[in-house]
Length: 203
Image (cartoon, rainbow, N blue to C red; front, top):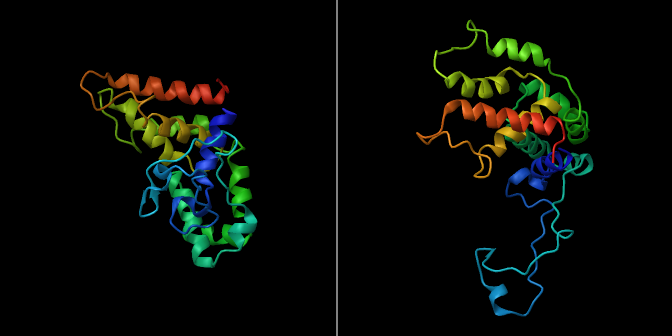
């Protein structure tokens, strides 16, 4: 699980958070005289020399870099981080968190804590007065999305569910929901197995 969490956090805490601001981003130089490595179009290189695993790193935004941004840039970075996680704070709350000058480290700390009430979450998403339920197996799918809506704290359990959801959108872990041959209960089985394995730090 540690490797998965670090992968997720590396994605989330990129300089500029996936935007085009270019903060902290450095272009990889070809490092060879081969003409193929010099072919590019609008900054995109068609060929590149192999990189060692140790060299393939992504710079993370820390509190110092975040606090050096203008207020408007801070708001954009914070908003991109949170929306990537399918989470959000009311604007006054977000502005207050940014003003503490520890937004990044505080967010990182939240993702290592258990704050959500799991039993209450599962009880709520099955409450027919709050969420629509059908007699079909679609409920298994709806519960996955409803759970994100009900989790009101950004914590370790939220991150586990987020990682599992992102992984099920990839070809390696996708239960192929869109195919007629795919049984809908399989979606919940694949998703829940990922959440459980992440929680148990399975490798």
